[in-house]
Image (tube, rainbow, N blue to C red; front, side):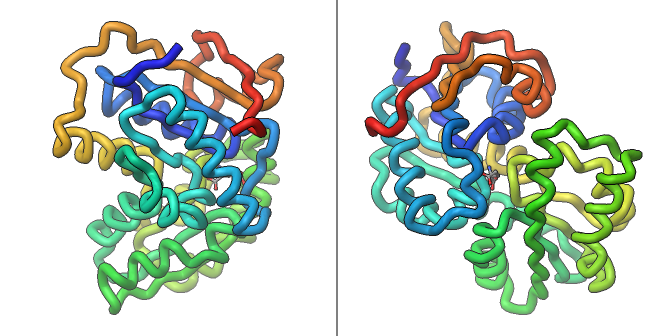
Length: 272
Ligand code: DGL
């Protein structure tokens, strides 16, 4: 099951498959090993210590599979445990915060940037701190959107849905009133609400998707370190979860943007 050539991607659950979708597109010659902690999701409202403990268990599982790089697709993990992971891992690591903040910093014209994420991500101020380091003159506006995750997981994502429109308005009104021109979608689930967010914010606000930016950044790191595959003979992705995979195809397919064609294996994450 293991492959020294694989990129290990993990998330608190299935949301990270929205990043895998981008990885498969940006890095078509790479093999992905994905772990989704479906037995312990959500992470976004847990304590820092718990999120860190889970993040290290998740990465231990990936490292046991000899991955050449670890990617935290989860906004929450990247925000709370990213620095610790980067220091301690023996292979290249990236979370979503740095690449996404970097792109937002280059896209903004008026220097007013919004960031939306889980309560833990917003509470960590990870994006704000990173953006202000890139340019102390930036004005950064943060907003936690805790109802977005359950909405997406219930499949309620349509731009015309009344509930979606109401919740989007409720969370994003202040950011809109502040006149931001760039908005970071700082959570795995938010790309699925992209259309509704676009409708509300308008075409003058650039939406920055953490999954895509992270895939592009991972490609850059692998290239710099001479770790890119020219081609990988066995590049079918492998998917692992910590709860039963029965009946999860529809949610997984939502994030992946296509049917789950590959077998999913359940593991005991508590043993790591
Ligand atoms: N994957 C999480 C994130 O991107 C969202 C779901 C959760 O709260 O665990 O922050």
